Image (cartoon, rainbow, N blue to C red; front, side, top):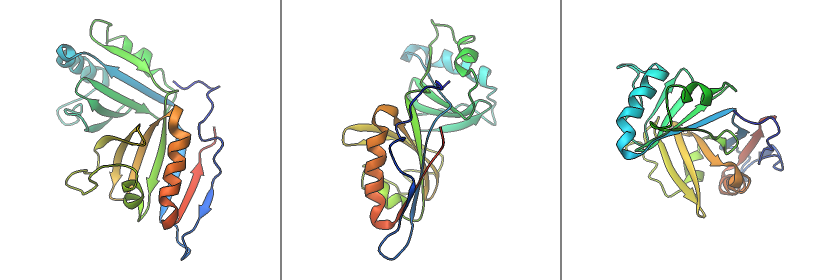
Length: 205
């Protein structure tokens, strides 16, 4: 759960529009902090047991299962669950609920770890006709639909700084950044999108 005293790394950016030479805005960015981010992890020998307990805790069913492989995502009652590695999940909620407390009860220390990362992750939403072109300048990813389908999350980065990209549509993405580096990453993204015309909005904190 995010600390109310947390300082947004986007505070020194200025919202506004920067049209292209022909007056278009083809990339739109919305940057904001997150209310609730939880990391759930274990070690390789504990993966099956953790998944069984987590599935029960989140109400997963055969029709709405846990993400089964790295890069897969699934909605759940507490938010969006992303499989960010073979032995870990990232759960992003939109409310300041006590997700850590709720999950630590069924997930004992000998089964895995539940860690609050609300202070350590922020999100930049990217959309527009040239969103893929702008992102392609920074991230060495194959953005073709077959390689990066809607719903998938990919771990990448630029200038040696990691970033996770979640594809929501053909030209719509959520970028999850480390709070420490997010100011500079947003600056780089604005620069990459500038030739296409870019607009930035910032959520109030």
